[in-house]
Image (cartoon, rainbow, N blue to C red; front, top):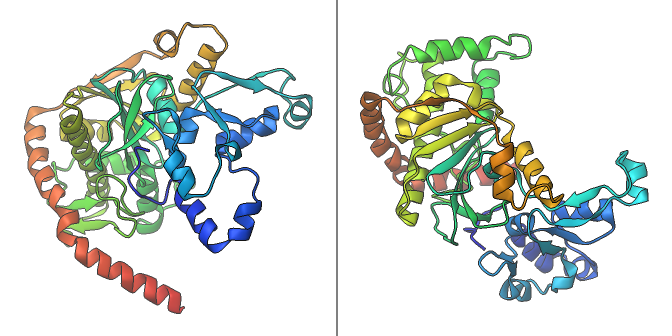
Length: 387
Protein backbone atom coordinates (compact mmCIF):
# COMPACT_ATOMS: atom_id res chain seq x y z
CA UNK A 1 0.00 0.00 0.00
CA UNK A 2 2.99 2.31 0.38
CA UNK A 3 1.68 3.37 3.80
CA UNK A 4 3.40 2.90 7.14
CA UNK A 5 0.77 2.27 9.88
CA UNK A 6 -0.78 5.63 10.77
CA UNK A 7 -4.28 6.92 11.67
CA UNK A 8 -4.75 8.46 8.20
CA UNK A 9 -5.63 5.36 6.07
CA UNK A 10 -9.21 4.26 6.71
CA UNK A 11 -8.38 0.55 6.78
CA UNK A 12 -7.72 0.80 10.54
CA UNK A 13 -11.11 2.43 11.13
CA UNK A 14 -12.72 -0.32 9.06
CA UNK A 15 -10.96 -2.96 11.17
CA UNK A 16 -12.19 -1.24 14.34
CA UNK A 17 -15.72 -1.20 12.93
CA UNK A 18 -15.48 -4.90 12.05
CA UNK A 19 -14.51 -5.74 15.63
CA UNK A 20 -16.66 -3.27 17.55
CA UNK A 21 -19.75 -2.89 15.33
CA UNK A 22 -19.90 -6.17 13.39
CA UNK A 23 -23.64 -6.01 12.77
CA UNK A 24 -23.49 -2.51 11.29
CA UNK A 25 -20.35 -3.42 9.35
CA UNK A 26 -21.98 -6.41 7.67
CA UNK A 27 -25.12 -4.43 6.83
CA UNK A 28 -23.09 -1.74 5.07
CA UNK A 29 -23.51 -2.09 1.31
CA UNK A 30 -20.69 0.22 0.19
CA UNK A 31 -17.52 1.74 1.61
CA UNK A 32 -16.45 4.76 -0.47
CA UNK A 33 -13.56 7.18 -0.36
CA UNK A 34 -14.56 10.86 -0.53
CA UNK A 35 -13.85 11.03 -4.27
CA UNK A 36 -15.97 7.93 -4.87
CA UNK A 37 -18.83 9.32 -2.78
CA UNK A 38 -18.88 12.61 -4.69
CA UNK A 39 -18.64 10.83 -8.04
CA UNK A 40 -21.61 8.65 -7.06
CA UNK A 41 -23.68 11.68 -6.06
CA UNK A 42 -22.86 13.40 -9.35
CA UNK A 43 -23.11 10.46 -11.75
CA UNK A 44 -24.96 7.66 -9.98
CA UNK A 45 -21.93 5.41 -10.59
CA UNK A 46 -19.57 3.82 -8.07
CA UNK A 47 -16.23 4.92 -9.51
CA UNK A 48 -13.13 6.65 -8.20
CA UNK A 49 -9.52 7.40 -9.10
CA UNK A 50 -6.43 5.28 -8.39
CA UNK A 51 -5.10 8.37 -6.67
CA UNK A 52 -8.11 8.54 -4.34
CA UNK A 53 -8.36 4.81 -3.65
CA UNK A 54 -4.72 4.53 -2.62
CA UNK A 55 -4.77 6.73 0.53
CA UNK A 56 -7.39 4.38 2.01
CA UNK A 57 -4.71 1.75 2.61
CA UNK A 58 -6.80 -0.82 0.72
CA UNK A 59 -5.00 -0.42 -2.60
CA UNK A 60 -1.99 -2.31 -3.97
CA UNK A 61 -0.05 0.51 -5.63
CA UNK A 62 2.31 -1.70 -7.60
CA UNK A 63 -0.54 -3.80 -9.04
CA UNK A 64 -2.95 -0.84 -9.42
CA UNK A 65 -5.70 -2.93 -7.83
CA UNK A 66 -7.33 -3.40 -4.46
CA UNK A 67 -5.25 -5.67 -2.23
CA UNK A 68 -6.88 -9.09 -1.92
CA UNK A 69 -5.09 -10.00 1.35
CA UNK A 70 -6.21 -6.73 2.96
CA UNK A 71 -9.79 -7.10 1.72
CA UNK A 72 -9.82 -10.68 3.03
CA UNK A 73 -8.55 -9.53 6.43
CA UNK A 74 -11.32 -6.92 6.54
CA UNK A 75 -13.94 -9.39 5.27
CA UNK A 76 -14.73 -7.04 2.39
CA UNK A 77 -15.61 -7.78 -1.22
CA UNK A 78 -14.27 -5.60 -4.01
CA UNK A 79 -17.83 -5.00 -5.25
CA UNK A 80 -18.43 -3.02 -2.02
CA UNK A 81 -15.83 -0.46 -3.12
CA UNK A 82 -15.76 2.08 -5.93
CA UNK A 83 -14.13 0.88 -9.14
CA UNK A 84 -10.73 2.61 -9.31
CA UNK A 85 -9.67 4.02 -12.68
CA UNK A 86 -6.63 5.88 -13.95
CA UNK A 87 -6.48 9.61 -13.13
CA UNK A 88 -7.58 11.66 -16.11
CA UNK A 89 -10.23 9.07 -17.07
CA UNK A 90 -13.85 10.08 -17.63
CA UNK A 91 -15.81 8.49 -14.77
CA UNK A 92 -19.27 9.54 -15.90
CA UNK A 93 -21.53 12.52 -16.52
CA UNK A 94 -23.53 14.79 -14.23
CA UNK A 95 -27.08 13.45 -14.00
CA UNK A 96 -30.19 15.59 -14.27
CA UNK A 97 -30.88 15.18 -10.56
CA UNK A 98 -27.33 16.21 -9.62
CA UNK A 99 -27.55 19.14 -12.02
CA UNK A 100 -30.62 20.44 -10.20
CA UNK A 101 -28.88 20.12 -6.83
CA UNK A 102 -25.56 21.69 -7.87
CA UNK A 103 -26.29 24.08 -10.72
CA UNK A 104 -23.91 22.18 -13.00
CA UNK A 105 -25.00 21.43 -16.55
CA UNK A 106 -26.44 17.94 -17.17
CA UNK A 107 -23.93 15.84 -19.08
CA UNK A 108 -20.88 17.65 -17.66
CA UNK A 109 -17.96 15.21 -17.63
CA UNK A 110 -16.76 13.97 -14.24
CA UNK A 111 -13.07 13.07 -14.48
CA UNK A 112 -10.80 11.13 -12.13
CA UNK A 113 -8.49 13.39 -10.15
CA UNK A 114 -6.75 12.85 -6.82
CA UNK A 115 -5.79 14.32 -3.48
CA UNK A 116 -4.48 17.82 -2.90
CA UNK A 117 -0.83 16.80 -2.55
CA UNK A 118 -0.93 14.56 -5.60
CA UNK A 119 -2.65 17.29 -7.63
CA UNK A 120 -0.04 19.77 -6.43
CA UNK A 121 2.65 17.54 -7.88
CA UNK A 122 0.98 17.66 -11.28
CA UNK A 123 0.27 21.40 -11.01
CA UNK A 124 3.97 22.12 -10.43
CA UNK A 125 5.11 19.83 -13.24
CA UNK A 126 6.75 17.39 -10.81
CA UNK A 127 6.85 14.60 -13.36
CA UNK A 128 10.51 13.66 -13.39
CA UNK A 129 13.30 13.09 -10.85
CA UNK A 130 15.22 16.18 -9.78
CA UNK A 131 12.21 18.36 -8.99
CA UNK A 132 10.02 18.26 -5.89
CA UNK A 133 7.03 20.31 -4.82
CA UNK A 134 6.61 21.76 -1.34
CA UNK A 135 3.13 22.88 -0.36
CA UNK A 136 3.42 25.31 2.55
CA UNK A 137 -0.23 25.12 3.49
CA UNK A 138 -1.95 24.23 6.75
CA UNK A 139 0.29 21.16 6.65
CA UNK A 140 3.72 21.25 5.03
CA UNK A 141 3.57 18.56 2.33
CA UNK A 142 6.21 17.81 -0.26
CA UNK A 143 6.63 15.15 -2.89
CA UNK A 144 9.12 13.73 -5.35
CA UNK A 145 8.15 11.89 -8.53
CA UNK A 146 9.31 8.30 -8.98
CA UNK A 147 8.75 6.32 -12.17
CA UNK A 148 8.90 3.08 -10.18
CA UNK A 149 7.25 1.91 -6.96
CA UNK A 150 9.38 2.49 -3.85
CA UNK A 151 8.50 2.37 -0.18
CA UNK A 152 10.29 3.26 3.05
CA UNK A 153 9.30 4.57 6.50
CA UNK A 154 11.01 7.83 5.47
CA UNK A 155 8.00 8.74 3.29
CA UNK A 156 4.60 7.52 2.17
CA UNK A 157 3.99 6.45 -1.40
CA UNK A 158 1.05 7.63 -3.51
CA UNK A 159 0.04 7.20 -7.12
CA UNK A 160 0.61 10.24 -9.32
CA UNK A 161 -2.37 12.18 -10.69
CA UNK A 162 -0.52 12.14 -14.01
CA UNK A 163 -1.63 8.51 -14.30
CA UNK A 164 1.98 7.35 -14.52
CA UNK A 165 4.45 6.70 -11.73
CA UNK A 166 4.30 7.59 -8.05
CA UNK A 167 4.73 10.43 -5.59
CA UNK A 168 7.02 9.89 -2.60
CA UNK A 169 5.46 12.22 -0.06
CA UNK A 170 6.68 13.92 3.12
CA UNK A 171 4.23 15.53 5.53
CA UNK A 172 4.46 17.67 8.65
CA UNK A 173 0.90 18.11 9.86
CA UNK A 174 1.55 21.63 11.14
CA UNK A 175 2.76 23.98 8.40
CA UNK A 176 1.22 27.45 8.27
CA UNK A 177 -1.05 26.17 11.03
CA UNK A 178 1.98 26.61 13.27
CA UNK A 179 2.58 30.24 12.29
CA UNK A 180 -1.10 30.97 12.92
CA UNK A 181 -0.99 29.10 16.23
CA UNK A 182 1.97 31.13 17.46
CA UNK A 183 0.43 34.44 16.45
CA UNK A 184 -2.97 33.72 18.00
CA UNK A 185 -2.09 31.65 21.07
CA UNK A 186 1.43 32.67 22.08
CA UNK A 187 1.61 36.25 20.85
CA UNK A 188 -2.13 36.82 21.55
CA UNK A 189 -2.64 38.79 18.35
CA UNK A 190 -5.75 38.63 16.17
CA UNK A 191 -4.37 38.64 12.60
CA UNK A 192 -7.74 39.83 11.27
CA UNK A 193 -7.58 42.92 13.48
CA UNK A 194 -3.83 43.35 12.89
CA UNK A 195 -3.18 42.08 9.34
CA UNK A 196 0.37 43.43 9.35
CA UNK A 197 1.51 41.10 12.15
CA UNK A 198 3.01 38.47 9.83
CA UNK A 199 5.03 41.02 7.85
CA UNK A 200 6.28 42.58 11.09
CA UNK A 201 7.33 39.23 12.53
CA UNK A 202 9.00 38.20 9.29
CA UNK A 203 10.96 41.46 9.13
CA UNK A 204 12.15 41.01 12.72
CA UNK A 205 12.97 37.32 12.21
CA UNK A 206 14.93 38.17 9.08
CA UNK A 207 17.36 40.25 11.13
CA UNK A 208 18.29 37.29 13.34
CA UNK A 209 21.17 34.90 12.62
CA UNK A 210 20.85 31.33 11.41
CA UNK A 211 19.68 29.25 14.36
CA UNK A 212 17.67 32.05 16.02
CA UNK A 213 20.39 32.64 18.63
CA UNK A 214 20.45 29.01 19.71
CA UNK A 215 16.72 28.19 19.65
CA UNK A 216 15.71 24.96 17.92
CA UNK A 217 12.09 23.90 17.38
CA UNK A 218 10.62 20.49 16.51
CA UNK A 219 7.25 21.17 14.80
CA UNK A 220 5.35 18.05 15.86
CA UNK A 221 2.36 19.85 17.40
CA UNK A 222 -0.03 17.18 16.02
CA UNK A 223 2.16 14.09 16.14
CA UNK A 224 4.66 13.06 13.49
CA UNK A 225 4.28 11.08 10.28
CA UNK A 226 7.53 10.41 8.40
CA UNK A 227 10.05 9.27 9.42
CA UNK A 228 9.07 8.41 13.01
CA UNK A 229 5.32 7.65 12.68
CA UNK A 230 4.37 8.51 16.24
CA UNK A 231 0.92 9.95 16.87
CA UNK A 232 1.87 10.76 20.48
CA UNK A 233 4.95 12.85 19.61
CA UNK A 234 4.63 16.54 20.36
CA UNK A 235 6.48 19.77 19.68
CA UNK A 236 9.73 20.73 21.37
CA UNK A 237 11.71 23.92 21.82
CA UNK A 238 15.36 23.38 22.75
CA UNK A 239 17.54 26.20 24.04
CA UNK A 240 14.75 28.63 25.03
CA UNK A 241 16.06 31.39 27.28
CA UNK A 242 15.22 34.84 28.58
CA UNK A 243 17.21 36.26 25.66
CA UNK A 244 14.60 35.07 23.18
CA UNK A 245 11.57 37.06 22.04
CA UNK A 246 8.74 36.76 19.54
CA UNK A 247 11.00 37.07 16.51
CA UNK A 248 13.19 34.22 17.77
CA UNK A 249 10.17 31.96 18.20
CA UNK A 250 8.89 32.87 14.76
CA UNK A 251 12.22 32.20 13.07
CA UNK A 252 12.72 28.95 15.00
CA UNK A 253 9.32 27.78 13.77
CA UNK A 254 10.31 28.46 10.15
CA UNK A 255 13.69 26.81 10.65
CA UNK A 256 12.21 23.74 12.35
CA UNK A 257 9.93 23.07 9.39
CA UNK A 258 12.81 23.69 6.97
CA UNK A 259 15.11 21.29 8.84
CA UNK A 260 12.42 18.60 8.86
CA UNK A 261 12.08 19.06 5.09
CA UNK A 262 15.86 18.80 4.69
CA UNK A 263 15.89 15.57 6.70
CA UNK A 264 13.07 14.09 4.61
CA UNK A 265 14.47 15.05 1.21
CA UNK A 266 17.83 13.54 2.15
CA UNK A 267 16.09 10.27 3.00
CA UNK A 268 14.23 10.19 -0.33
CA UNK A 269 17.54 10.75 -2.12
CA UNK A 270 19.07 7.89 -0.12
CA UNK A 271 16.28 5.46 -1.03
CA UNK A 272 15.93 6.39 -4.71
CA UNK A 273 19.54 7.22 -5.52
CA UNK A 274 18.23 10.29 -7.37
CA UNK A 275 19.27 13.80 -6.41
CA UNK A 276 16.62 16.50 -5.93
CA UNK A 277 17.86 19.84 -7.27
CA UNK A 278 14.80 22.06 -7.05
CA UNK A 279 11.84 22.58 -4.71
CA UNK A 280 8.80 24.31 -6.23
CA UNK A 281 6.99 26.03 -3.36
CA UNK A 282 3.23 26.50 -3.41
CA UNK A 283 0.53 27.34 -0.87
CA UNK A 284 0.16 30.43 1.30
CA UNK A 285 3.55 30.03 2.97
CA UNK A 286 5.28 30.29 -0.41
CA UNK A 287 4.55 34.02 -0.34
CA UNK A 288 7.10 34.37 2.48
CA UNK A 289 10.47 35.19 0.91
CA UNK A 290 12.25 34.66 4.24
CA UNK A 291 10.78 31.19 4.71
CA UNK A 292 11.70 30.22 1.15
CA UNK A 293 15.26 31.47 1.71
CA UNK A 294 15.54 29.49 4.94
CA UNK A 295 14.30 26.36 3.12
CA UNK A 296 16.84 26.87 0.32
CA UNK A 297 19.67 27.28 2.82
CA UNK A 298 18.58 24.36 5.03
CA UNK A 299 18.03 21.87 2.19
CA UNK A 300 20.74 23.02 -0.19
CA UNK A 301 18.15 23.05 -2.98
CA UNK A 302 17.07 25.82 -5.31
CA UNK A 303 13.63 27.05 -4.24
CA UNK A 304 11.46 28.04 -7.21
CA UNK A 305 8.37 30.18 -6.74
CA UNK A 306 5.77 29.91 -9.53
CA UNK A 307 3.48 32.68 -10.70
CA UNK A 308 0.52 30.83 -9.19
CA UNK A 309 0.76 29.22 -5.77
CA UNK A 310 -2.64 27.49 -6.23
CA UNK A 311 -1.05 24.52 -7.95
CA UNK A 312 -3.41 21.95 -6.42
CA UNK A 313 -6.40 23.40 -8.29
CA UNK A 314 -4.22 23.67 -11.40
CA UNK A 315 -3.25 20.00 -11.11
CA UNK A 316 -6.92 18.99 -10.99
CA UNK A 317 -7.55 21.15 -14.06
CA UNK A 318 -4.64 19.46 -15.88
CA UNK A 319 -6.14 16.02 -15.17
CA UNK A 320 -9.50 17.31 -16.42
CA UNK A 321 -7.94 18.72 -19.60
CA UNK A 322 -6.36 15.36 -20.32
CA UNK A 323 -9.70 13.63 -19.65
CA UNK A 324 -11.50 15.98 -22.04
CA UNK A 325 -9.10 14.93 -24.80
CA UNK A 326 -7.46 18.34 -25.15
CA UNK A 327 -4.02 16.78 -24.68
CA UNK A 328 -2.58 13.36 -25.44
CA UNK A 329 -1.45 12.81 -21.86
CA UNK A 330 -1.03 14.57 -18.53
CA UNK A 331 2.61 15.43 -19.24
CA UNK A 332 1.63 17.36 -22.38
CA UNK A 333 -1.17 19.10 -20.49
CA UNK A 334 1.18 20.04 -17.65
CA UNK A 335 3.77 21.40 -20.08
CA UNK A 336 1.13 23.66 -21.64
CA UNK A 337 -0.72 24.71 -18.49
CA UNK A 338 1.78 25.08 -15.64
CA UNK A 339 2.71 28.68 -14.95
CA UNK A 340 6.07 30.35 -15.27
CA UNK A 341 8.57 30.39 -12.42
CA UNK A 342 8.75 33.95 -11.10
CA UNK A 343 11.99 33.63 -9.17
CA UNK A 344 14.54 31.10 -7.99
CA UNK A 345 16.28 31.34 -4.63
CA UNK A 346 19.75 29.81 -4.53
CA UNK A 347 21.19 28.40 -1.29
CA UNK A 348 23.76 30.65 0.40
CA UNK A 349 26.89 28.48 0.95
CA UNK A 350 27.78 29.99 4.33
CA UNK A 351 24.23 29.50 5.63
CA UNK A 352 24.10 25.99 4.16
CA UNK A 353 27.09 25.00 6.29
CA UNK A 354 25.49 26.41 9.44
CA UNK A 355 22.19 24.67 8.76
CA UNK A 356 24.13 21.47 8.16
CA UNK A 357 25.36 21.70 11.76
CA UNK A 358 21.85 22.40 13.01
CA UNK A 359 20.46 19.48 10.99
CA UNK A 360 22.77 17.07 12.78
CA UNK A 361 21.40 18.32 16.11
CA UNK A 362 17.82 18.28 14.82
CA UNK A 363 18.10 14.63 13.76
CA UNK A 364 18.78 13.67 17.39
CA UNK A 365 15.81 15.48 18.97
CA UNK A 366 13.08 12.90 18.48
CA UNK A 367 15.21 9.78 19.20
CA UNK A 368 16.62 11.44 22.32
CA UNK A 369 13.17 12.26 23.70
CA UNK A 370 11.15 9.29 22.40
CA UNK A 371 10.84 7.53 25.77
CA UNK A 372 10.03 10.73 27.64
CA UNK A 373 7.44 11.65 24.99
CA UNK A 374 5.80 8.21 25.32
CA UNK A 375 5.68 8.48 29.11
CA UNK A 376 4.22 11.97 28.92
CA UNK A 377 1.63 10.82 26.36
CA UNK A 378 0.57 7.99 28.68
CA UNK A 379 0.20 10.49 31.51
CA UNK A 380 -1.79 12.83 29.26
CA UNK A 381 -4.17 10.09 28.14
CA UNK A 382 -4.68 8.83 31.70
CA UNK A 383 -5.41 12.22 33.20
CA UNK A 384 -7.65 13.22 30.28
CA UNK A 385 -9.68 10.04 30.75
CA UNK A 386 -10.04 10.79 34.46
CA UNK A 387 -11.66 14.15 33.75
